[in-house]
Image (cartoon, rainbow, N blue to C red):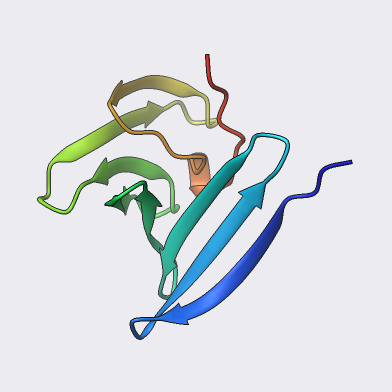
Length: 101
């Protein structure tokens, strides 16, 4: 049985969380303040741009370029998703396992 776990670390005067999911072999890091601020994708940091519900609408890289844009219906189903990035966080900021083709 595989278990996902999280570890928190105080680095560079900020809280970071490392998630590891052995069934998918994925490591994810995130930057947190009051809410989730950014995710680490390899050498890149991508910032969450959300709405009032905490829904991830866009991700932007360190230059401000939008790398992911999503639209949802009122029930949380993704209507469209464009860009080169991906995140397991979606409607109302909930974690959802990312499937890879």
